[in-house]
Length: 593
Image (cartoon, rainbow, N blue to C red; front, side, top):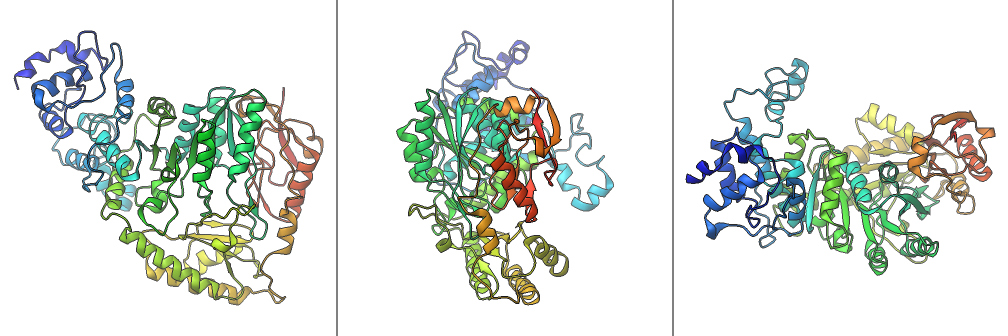
């Protein structure tokens, strides 16, 4: 350990930058040997410059790692993000180890006098009510960014190792752990690809995070209408032809397309043809971002649709917690290919993620990755979940007054078929005398069965790796009982005629003109007016009827007579309106210029 004499106080105090004269070739030491050194010297926050000496003197010249060369004046964050250019090393076979989770466990076991955040001091000061609910273990492992636990925004230790393992397993060039959910992943992806004034091509039924991303980035929306099923009142995916037409329209006007954003799968499990959309984007040299929040499990069983990365997406944002086993709010962002720079994404993530990340969330991502690496190909937990879903679907189809969404019912028009995630069970209820919200209340309060998404004429259930056979039995038996109680006395048809009339393509109003960017509309002063006097004004709200879940007016768009009439009709039919400050639409918020 002769090198310790060389680590003068000046080295430790000069920060994370690489200074002139430093050897740029070895900025990091091997993770496990470096952590062993930190175990002895854990009170020292070592700069990248100091770690250069460690990797040379502790490991020796023969063991130095060929990490990207540091540039003179480059700081730690920039060097970290550049390191993502190198794909994870190794054979691609995951060893199932959990470097981040193990480090958190090791730190939690220390007999330490802690004078750092959080204030509960490893559970000693935790609220008794919370301890009674979750026990002390959650608090003991609720640790801050200690030296041996790495830094989320400058990962070069156990977080870096965990993210590299995830990138190998999911087939990415780089993976970032997210602790603010997929929302921050979508925001960072748009910010990294779109400059102010660039156009973001996206379907109108995108998640709210897409709107907030345009507010943050200054991007302008070029909306494409998703195909939707009037029989089910559900918006599906987008067609490659619509995406290409939108790109060509923007460029014809002399404007730049920053990126294309597609939601696949949708909340109901419907997948767009990402492979064909990626071919369109590649031919126009435009980055493709896929909001794959509901599809983190696709990679792990051949009976599931292909993942977005496997079909050519540049960025895929996945909610690892939705069907896989990480904690709620934990997600991953995967990058593949050269069109999106890893540095830009890393920089943008620092703006939308907490600087006090939860190591419970981070380590749950590490553990979820290890869990899915247990077996290559058809993962046994997913196989069991698929078996449960298939049996549930068959049994539900046998109930006369219920209808179940399946692959045969899903199409994107023009002969474009698309896949359906078999783990999503969407049940049509138009054969009953109650709507989806009433059915949801009855299932929850009387039968203890809790759905994922009730709607006016449908109710959606999610089967996951944690679903058991007893849950499937309860679901089917309770729905059969509800159907027996509330079946229409009239002749049951295979769709809701009123809903079909409302949702027919000719009745959906065309998107109106964009008068302000989402960013300008967000920061504009607003005033509430009687909706009768709102026509011709600039809307300050996102007004979305459900069904079909497609916003009719978005912030910055001009309110038209057709749009207002359609929305009033939705309200009269007692369908729900989301996003409006006044769901009755007696009043609307407009921008005051």
